[in-house]
Amino acid sequence: MPLKNTELVSILKNLMEVCKDGEQGYKDAADDVRDEEIQKVLLKYSHQRSIFFAELEITVRKLGGDMEFAGSVLGILHRRWMDVKFAVAGSDSYSILKECVRGEKAAITAYEKALGRELSADILNLVNRQYNEIKDALEHLINIQHTLGFAADS
Image (cartoon, rainbow, N blue to C red; front, side, top):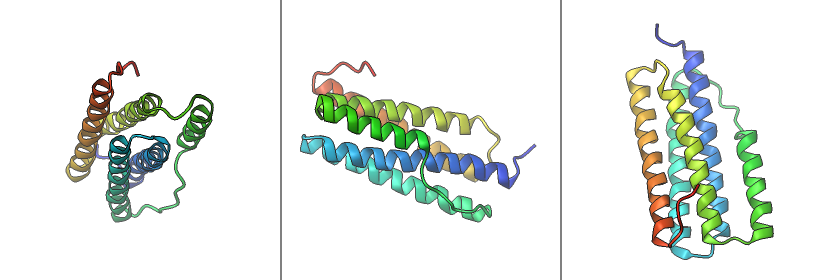
């Protein structure tokens, strides 16, 4: 049985939270990292998540969903924890990339949960495309870690 619009809106708003958290998390990480090339990559992914959020928002509006939104409490807490950690341990590229990888793995889990639901074809295509781009971002971050000589132990 297809999902009701209210159920679809709930699923999509959860993904919107993930994207908003990712957008802000990447922006914060870019502000903290000293390596300009890594900073460019992080800002690119922040912008990507902003676009993902907007795409999901359009879909939610089409489904009649309201747009009250602030980001997830877990995302906010994670960013504050990152701020404290970097203030104490320093904002080295390794620590920042490790946290970004951790965030991407959480995003992938959220998207996999959504993909496990009975989504309409258009929503499935949107969510699946974003999911694949997030997986690509994760792989890219891990490759950067390897290039810099860091083991991807995240």
